[in-house]
Length: 248
Image (cartoon, rainbow, N blue to C red):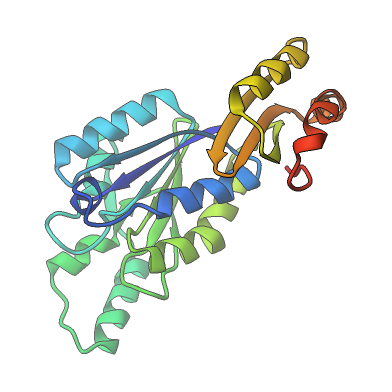
């Protein structure tokens, strides 16, 4: 199961807002054992959304979409997704009631812009949002999982952690692989990489590096049953330079 994230919003691609949400979601998913495939960011135009969704739908097993679920005319995520998947959106009574309650609480009047937030795929499982009007949703279509989340981090992240992540765990298969990490200090990237990859050449795994001065993070992704062998092979090389203990 490989997951992709599509973050939507003109404010993201224009640089007005930093997209920290995708990074936090990816970290949680990786720690939960999911394999991450891609991060993509697009604007609010319908054709941009459609193109982004089509690409990710064709290449990955699950898709998380953030943003574009609000009440305004540029909130088009649900409509673009429905167009790509060729499915209908239906009005959920529970979503409508939630929106009306939120509006009454803040002494606001209902209108169509708010009502569009009650539209979701008929097979969807709705995610509560105690922090706003836009509910989230999870559903499966042609054996692929989809999660729709509101854009504002104060709404998106609590919904993801409490509802979307458990939904994905119950509807998806987590990876059989683990990612071992070592943080090294005072060691050049090139020479250590050459020696490390030579040691691992007979073990099926993927090696990666991340420079975070003064540290160098070494990552080895392998099957769970291979992690003992990987540690046995690489730790004698890395031990003199390790700044902390390896972790998964």
